[in-house]
Length: 135
Image (cartoon, rainbow, N blue to C red; front, side):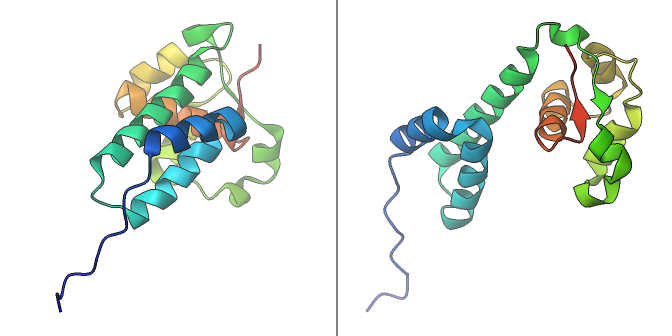
């Protein structure tokens, strides 16, 4: 008998991701992909789909009518109950930069993180309702 456990077969990520995006949206799909990475940590195609969904999330943020000139603001919910958000260090740092005057373009300049990471974190903060990006 072999000492190596038999790895589960890899799912058809393209079908699963496409269906999930269509029916549940990018954030739900992203969460499910992160769960799947724990089961399939060495699956390179899964990692690729995670990055594709992250890209879709950032594109959705940038689809705002004002684009890079959109000005994020801290939400009333965040200001009144910030401890429920449980921010990590990167999120907390970006929140500290949001003053209601700086647009996304200026935040990218001030952020120590790469532009994509900065935009993804801002999209996450918006999804969690810590910030709003008014029209």
